[in-house]
Length: 206
Image (tube, rainbow, N blue to C red; front, side, top):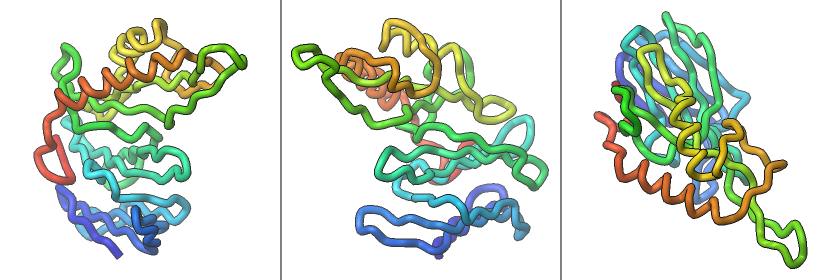
């Protein structure tokens, strides 16, 4: 069992770990606050491979958002946000695995996180045609007073630069793109990483 102390009286317990040399999958999770169980999950496999996770966000308007890394192997992992309000899980949402700690990436005071949904794959639609890839947007979330929320305006702005147009926040294999967009997305990710600041402690940030 792995037990991780978090901020504000939270403790995360991960059990039933399977060691695959490069990573460990945990199939049982329990979250406690001040000794009281807030969350139990035995239906999902979690990982602790990315140093950003677990990420516990304290919300100025009350409550916390806990972001954990969910395995998607052999594909790309994703994050899961648990919205904790008054000692219980009031909601949950899947998000991409974030590429860096929070940074101020636009003009408002809230800090943002960014990530994308899938590994890039390329294919040739025509034997002599240029290689193509999928629409795989870089999606931004900001830590607002109420918790972690999609930053729609920043997501739209950045993906218009990458793709020349905005086609939503979901991965779309049915919307083929020239492979040149991968380089543009990599450039945007590099900017996010350069502007990111380390969190205040290993497992929490305000």
